[in-house]
Image 1 (tube, helix red, strand yellow):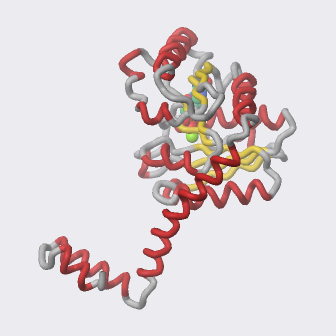
Image 2 (cartoon, rainbow, N blue to C red):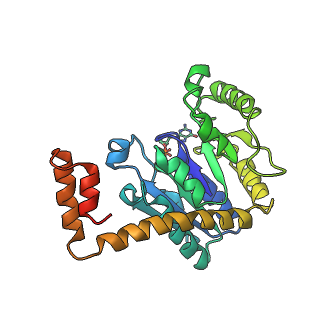
Image 3 (cartoon, rainbow, N blue to C red):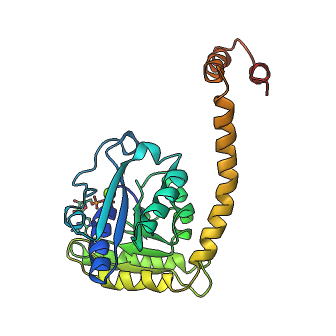
Length: 262
Ligand SMILES: Nc1nc2c(ncn2[C@@H]2O[C@H](COP(=O)(O)OP(=O)(O)O)[C@@H](O)[C@H]2O)c(=O)[nH]1
Ligand SMILES: [Mg+2]
């Protein structure tokens, strides 16, 4: 499962709470979390919970924070392999937390069976900040901080339900639901877990994975052709030199490509 949402919304806190709930239900849980203390998010986030101290000491949990450096562009590539690996190692529930910015939010969709979007609670205008595209990709939406701001959270839930009513379902026989919760007190976590398990039992996972792998084929092809090209003797240096000359206006793009034999 992928957990998406803006930095600081409460992804790590929720992942830890969900992870503990899944363990209590008898599962083995792996968490692939992206360390947000990177240039991507402009430094560390106040009170960041990526380390998940309670979950990481559980014998049936495996928490792996990874630097976001290899996650922005190569998100699909590296994460797909890691998900398969931890599954093979016996972790039957895998939670992938995104860094919460830009392309990672869309890319994660290519490697998980199900997407949970965390929405920041806020009034009308702030909600407009949730891009339609992001909401469209969510199989489930949760609004955290029910403990701190119950009124605003409930209002946000209603408003999001309204927005979702206009979107087409992400899977047949499925309706994207919006739930209020608190990663801190655990309120609403069991219900959220139930909904996630309900999505799992829809049986769309196998088809999604096959479609993802078919899509990955083209991307892998692009990537590997590029790697093979750059692996030619002297090619990386040649490309760097031509790039400099194109930038300096000494050669045109076409001439530069010609020199590379393209
Ligand atoms: N009161 C309250 N605080 C929360 C909740 N979820 C997250 N937080 C706090 O919000 C801050 C950022 O949370 P974090 O999980 O690191 O956000 P992330 O960047 O989305 O992973 C931390 O200080 C959390 O303790 C919640 O449900 N209730
Ligand atoms: Mg986090």
